[in-house]
Length: 279
Image (cartoon, rainbow, N blue to C red):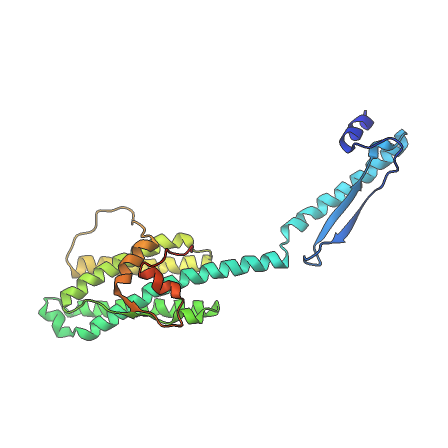
């Protein structure tokens, strides 16, 4: 009963010598510890006696046992070349994500720094705001600088230090109210942008850190709307994510130029010349 089934599977011809066995062969262009398991299973059905057929099946069983034991190891162990390609792709994706996040933080730092240098505590008082409002904005600036410093450090570690150079900005701020209104827009943009880009992170570490940054941005956005502008809570249950296109359209209005050292895609994207990269 065994011979016809095996013969049909192996398509052997009666009387042909049998070559059978298992051995390990080093795989070309792969880790030398990685092996391909080669099994010769030719023409089992050509044995003409029960004894020789059983011997062949026993050899086949040993061969398949060895194959079953080693195959998971071979499949689970990535080769050096494939692992390197994966690492490079992940690094490129992370660096792109971090660079665009840095751009947004640098814009915020420039906005708060230049505006607070322009507007004195007396300007805030004249506009009817207590001293605590300006102090609060100083805290927002401090937080934006901390975020920016972190991003610069991480991007530098990934070998993209040239991409950390800041661009030039111009903001239409002349009065305290101009500043407050634009600060509300920038914080709302930061919140929705971080909500939108968190899904693109390929690093657990970065996902956690940016989640914390999102918490900061949301707290400041709420403070500006309620404490500074005396508005009610927004009637929403879930924050709407902002796409990179939407972020670029708004943030790009304040960009006047970027130095030669920075990735040219940054300026081109935020001025609307190119589509956002795949992050």
